[in-house]
Amino acid sequence: MKLPPAPRIRRFQRRLLAWYGVHRRDLPWRRTRRPYRVLVSEIMLQQTQVDRVIPKYLQFLRRYPTIRHLARARVEEVRRLWYPLGYNIRPVRLHAIARETVARYAGRLPDDEEALRRLPGIGRYTAGAVRAFAYGRDAAVLDTNVRRVLGRVFLGPRRLARVRGQKTFWDLAEALLPPGRAYDFNQALMDFGATWCTPRKPQCPRCPMRGFCATVATSAS
DNA sequence: AATCCGGGGCA
DNA sequence: TGCCCAGGATT
Image 1 (tube, rainbow, N blue to C red):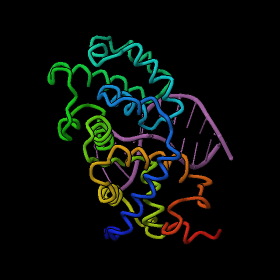
Image 2 (image 1 turned 45 degrees about the horizontal axis):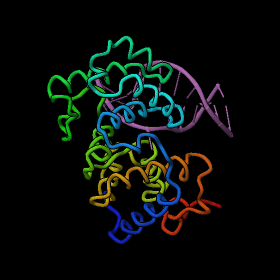
Image 3 (image 1 turned 120 degrees about the vertical axis):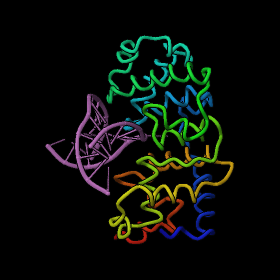
Image 4 (image 1 turned 135 degrees about the horizontal axis):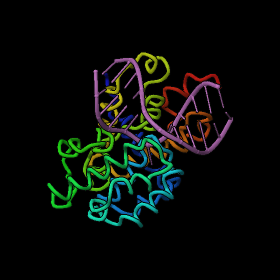
């Protein structure tokens, strides 16, 4: 697809980061960059809302403070502690990641995409999240929030309706990433989608992207 | 690229 | 009830 022109990209980056400075959420996993904690949060957040993850994240880390604690645990116990987050294959895979990381990587989670994605339960999103949030790398993330924001702002309803796969969105997410600021930019993008550019009743009237958003421009109101 | 996966919150 | 949620694995 045709990527947005450079000036628009810069304007989007600037306005998103400015918005983030004012409206960002204070979430437990933003208080650390330790790879293990980032990993636990990202696995829990797969298809699961932030508000349901927070208490379980804190409880899980109290029970398994390090990746070695988790690796030593019995999988059945980990599975019980997971309830009621759902997708109960996730704790099994997280436990397997802990054991494999201790066994093959001396307890240090890999920071390269290929090694991360060989681990069970880590796909493109989670690999990018670990690389950006734990290791400060310039890695893009694409989740349901980012997809909605980018689809609205840069594609608009007409083009959006014709998009099939995820490639368009990944290309956009990578093109927009400001080098050296992937942590804040990715967190900002997800916060923005979760609290401003929401599925229903988005905050268009006071949206910082209003001037160039491809969707607000076509909406009746 | 399409489908399936588990469970809870909310309009 | 139906939609939505910081996706990944399998086909």
